Image (spheres, rainbow, N blue to C red):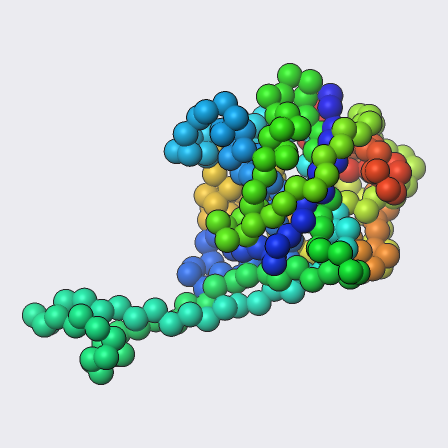
Length: 268
């Protein structure tokens, strides 16, 4: 078992919209964990020289080696919004050509879809950052080189820079935790988990990133493997977790700044 801490810096924010809500779908407050798997798959494919067409296949393949995947905002504060863009549709209508948008009849055929995006603001004088923690099996093909090679999280416009990759210690605690343990990391509300919230906590619904058997977008549309998440915000938010889990396990990881934190991952 190997564990890594990965710090990601955002250029402006990101765009990762909720699939299945039509063309005017909102963006998430924070990138779903599956976007990191997609980014790793893209970086891994470049290293091993596999084509972009195998992206989904690589995501499914890599997810089978991941034991725990979570994140916490370091200084990032999200602001989700909807960007309205007018789309004019010139073309061939009723036997007549409308080659330009100047024809008044063209304006009767347009759409204005709202596209969700999320701007990442900073709580200090540094660029907005999110720290990911990734626990993988010993035989996983994922390497630090793949993490350093991440270029975006979400759409092609969602440019990011990896500013830190560090191997950290991690231990498997099993599926039962009697004493309360503190965590600053995003936590799925899975069956058997007890949680006490402290401070500001955001809520999202993400696709379970472990052992994927279908593309995440398909899972959203079909309502399969979608799990509620609690995300402590940087303004002194944190969680206390304990309980007895069946298909999941507790992992203790050593955060480079905050020390021991417990994250919920898949059962070994």
